[in-house]
Image 1 (tube, rainbow, N blue to C red):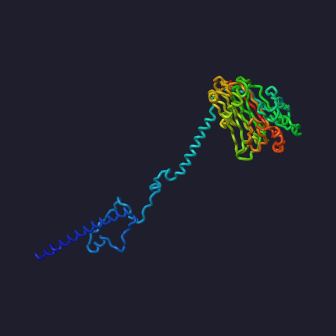
Image 2: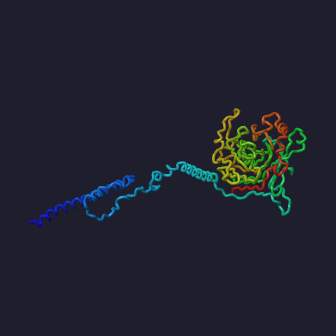
Image 3: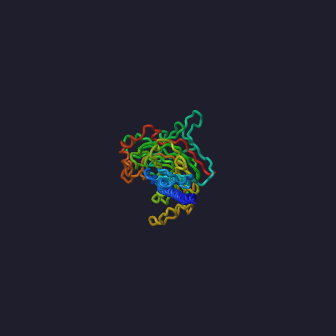
Length: 442
């Protein structure tokens, strides 16, 4: 009996110690897991102060514990004190679209895209003309007819138009066939205004200035015209490339029409608002009479900021079909004037039905595109001054008024102002033409 008592007394003690050790081990595990979860939720909570002892450490100092090997669970985040940096894509700014991050850049890109698309659309519209089969009908590059020969204006292709006061434009020059005013040099045709001795002496009269006006003997109806030319330099010099009807099928001017492919002014450009040698105008003249000329509806102008039209050669073109008429410079995409001929111009003009008590009837009898449905000659002309209104009274330093008492005398009295602007070199003072080509419908 006495030998078994100590054994029975020790068993409860060992069992109790083992139970406490197991509980303390579970408590330590729970504490570790709780700390890991807390650090995952708030990485700024650092590990426990080394000076403090955790519950498991306190339990191990008071009660013997059973040592066990524990595996680290991969489910929980790292217990490092420094938080892992977040990627740019994961940030709020990274998740935002480019429209929110850089709205100005997106706006600029959209504007540029719109400009490009608009340019493509406009360019296609400018170059789109009804197709027509064309055959070369007239060509002159002003080369000598024989090798080594002297070139001159071909009388079989061209004819001179002589006049005083400029064929209705009331200009201050008279047209002559003189070789001083029209000549060919180095395969280039020149139409040059000259000051005559009578004008230099200061005498009164119309023959102050002589100049040139020529036209092709051939006329075309519908097709293409190309004239490669350089405009003249000099105040109040008026160069023009135009077409006039072969016959007045609908009556006197402007009933039978006029096509001004290119007109300019030789005056120097001194202000941003000037429209002189830096501008080319295209105009259609048509109407019942001079006072009802509808040219204001069919006039357009091309202005360049530099490299003026007297500085180099350009190609002045006309595309003419039964449904449209288009003028251009250098290439069809550089359009100056475009007019729809697929309609009655009389109906489009809305001309008043009464004029001076007389009823106005349609001079073109309802024909579409009339009067621009007839053959026209090509005309090259260099004029000076005039009272037709081409040189407006508001033009800078204009020495005469169109409605003045003596506009021609006023013009000549200001010769000290405009004559020095005329180059001594005749090739610069006149319009230079390198080539003329005309195509018509086959």
